[in-house]
Image 1 (cartoon, protein in one colour):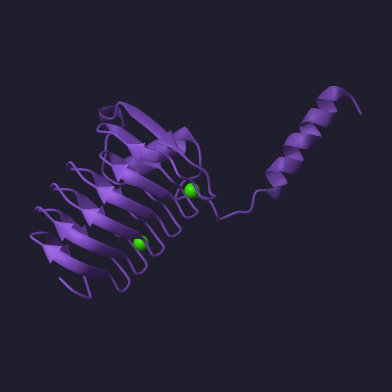
Image 2 (cartoon, rainbow, N blue to C red; image 1 turned 30 degrees about the vertical axis):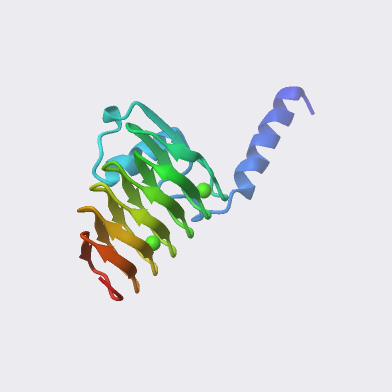
Length: 163
Ligand SMILES: [Ca+2]
Ligand SMILES: [Ca+2]
């Protein structure tokens, strides 16, 4: 086997082992993240940086203003979201969604501790939970049984428990 043939064989074998249907809505590349952002109603050109994770569990730390991050599949977590976080599938977690940020949980049971400072949490499918929904922030539960534990001046859409 020549090196070229070996390389082709390796690429082919890698392609074969990627299970179909487990990626994010579109896949797990920068182009896929940009496509997901467009699907969610954003213009990728509006962000200063766009980064992304894998279909595994990702913890990008915190997102600043103007930053977008696609978690894709897996249980992804962000500490402070001041930008735009697309959680994708899996049970995603944000501690603080603040400063007019956006957290789209996507499928799975997503959890947000504090939704504040005019931020938006779109839970998507699954049973999503926000502990404190406050300061004119919006929790849109989407499908599933969604819960607001304490609502202090926030808005609730499609929320089954609390609020
Ligand atoms: Ca992920
Ligand atoms: Ca969800």
